[in-house]
Amino acid sequence: MTQVILSESQQDYLKIVLDLINEKKVARIKEIARRKGVSMPSVTEAMHKLSNDGFVQYSVREFVELTPAGETAAHRLSSKNMFLKNFFIDVLGIEESVAEKEACEIEHHLSMTTLDRLILLYQFLSECKKNEQLTLTLFKKCIQSAEGVSEIDPECKSCFVTGNFPHRLGQNTVHTLLSKLKRGQKGQVVMLGPDTELRRRIIEKGLLPGSAFLLEEEGNADQQYCILTDGCSIELDSNAASMIEVAVE
Amino acid sequence: MTQVILSESQQDYLKIVLDLINEKKVARIKEIARRKGVSMPSVTEAMHKLSNDGFVQYSVREFVELTPAGETAAHRLSSKNMFLKNFFIDVLGIEESVAEKEACEIEHHLSMTTLDRLILLYQFLSECKKNEQLTLTLFKKCIQSAEGVSEIDPECKSCFVTGNFPHRLGQNTVHTLLSKLKRGQKGQVVMLGPDTELRRRIIEKGLLPGSAFLLEEEGNADQQYCILTDGCSIELDSNAASMIEVAVE
DNA sequence: TAAATTAGTTAGGCGTGCCTAATTTGTCAA
DNA sequence: TTGACAAATTAGGCACGCCTAACTAATTTA
Image (tube, rainbow over all chains, first blue to last red; front, side, top):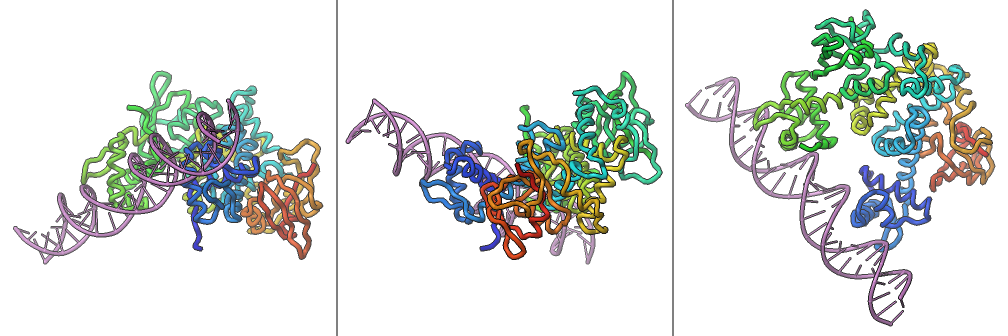
């Protein structure tokens, strides 16, 4: 048999079947439908296809079982999912239910290489002795400062506007704040400041670390800053502008 | 007009149109088709739809242009893509062409929250003063050791099998190697060792940090270890088994 | 044991996103 | 000014993944 490629939906079915078998010993059409949020006929149809392709064992009106091939595929997906979820929770500090959902959407698209590197990063952040196991703890604090959960550490606050970010302009660049630029200057975003709400508003507009831009219009307390990036005009107020570290040549 | 949700494919079209306009001033059907890897009729059809939904301005046989809504959507996607690509390259050390491809597949599925946290992580790893800017450099070295590019640092090597990983078993756990367990013992994978080839073989089997398992069969130089995880039997040779750190109660 | 309930199936349909083949439009060169 | 060619379109079709409505099979339960 030639290599059959499973669609995302099919992979989801396999994962659900595996989960059900592990949890309840058997996988029923109805329960699969419920978990996947589809109608029963959709499940029947999908099971027939998966059965044809050799991933499940299924005859009409019987329980669904996984073939070895199906088990392998399901398990692979499942463990990817679990790891990603843990990464989101342990490293990125994302809330469990959100992490679960995100992991599920992304798992299909992660290559081996990237997964492997994420695992390395996870292990590194949690363990590296040379780093004195500070890293993850520090990063957690950094998130908390940023979220305003704990008092913002003054050191953390300033940390967003200093340093030597690996941006991609020429060598002879100066780092400054967007709010300090003059009309017509070009630059590249290096960092976004710690205020989460403000930062997310900026991110939402598509201005991220690495974005190249041109300052079209200086602003001030009353006037919006207007910048052109990637063929797109963006307006920012001065609070936002003074929270964006940029590199200019 | 009610909130129109763009499909992945439609988002890709918008991004391509934006890129083309930025690069070549105009977006032609033919070039869009080439970049997206689809036929011209598919593009025509898609442009009509996007035009109906108000994201592009398009009349038959004319250049494609973006409406403000289209520009916003395209730009958002584009900047997400750029950031992800940078993250993959700068942090995970993934090769540019691969990073590009991966970023493109994942960008559609990243929520604001996760994107924001990844940006924080990126900034943190690159900048945090408290961490003495060591982190990213150290991680890069860790990757290189793991890949066998440079000599494996003995300290890095041992770092994979020590420490206090945030696994999810009870409190009273002991860390050891999978190869040291007896048949019937249960545990949870904590870390995978530094040898990249071996590690990837393990990952491929779906055994990742966090996986809970039961040792079904002890192995040795001649005999495979056989472990059950997530309802799935996995065989490992003793090299692999002695590269897996586990937590047991 | 017959009626009622529930699980599962079949049949038919729909939107999306793609395709090929055939046709139309526009442009440039002989 | 008229072919020749390239670009774009129209027409018709296909696979996928989902749906509802109507039916059948199996199991309760009165």
